[in-house]
Image (tube, one colour):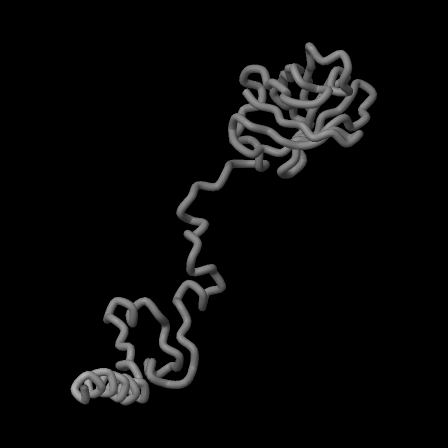
Amino acid sequence: MSHRLVAPLAAILLAACQADQSPPAYTPSPAAISAVQPANAEGDISGDGPLVLDSAANGADPFLPDAGDYPAPAGDGQSWVDLAQGSWKVAGGAASGCQLRFDHPAANGIAAASARHCPTSQLAEVSSWRGAGDRIELFSASGTPVAFLYVDRPDLLTGYMVDGPELVVSR
């Protein structure tokens, strides 16, 4: 009977002895060390100062790709989308079924636009458009703003009408 008591008691004592020991110290790989900037000018990474990733030291987010990895859109923000190529269809709401067409802008930046198949929507009044930064503004014949659109993708515009309803416009 005593040998049955000795084995569990030995296991408990062994576990108690190991609980006082700390795990082995972490030793980073050479690749991890070369990926960080030293905490001080002497190159000592064993100091108390924080380790800083090279890209974070330059003000960039080290977990996002550099902006230079992707080509920037040319010109005024939406010129990489040829709005004048084909017609655009409006989905959802009172404007559902409308088709918009955009002409190429003139020297003053304003271009003709037209809408069809949308008699119950203010979009039926669209007669011109212009690019304003990252926004496309649609106007009636009297020059009153009708809607504002933003380029989400080359084939998708989203925005809203001046009176509130949201718009989804696609090719």
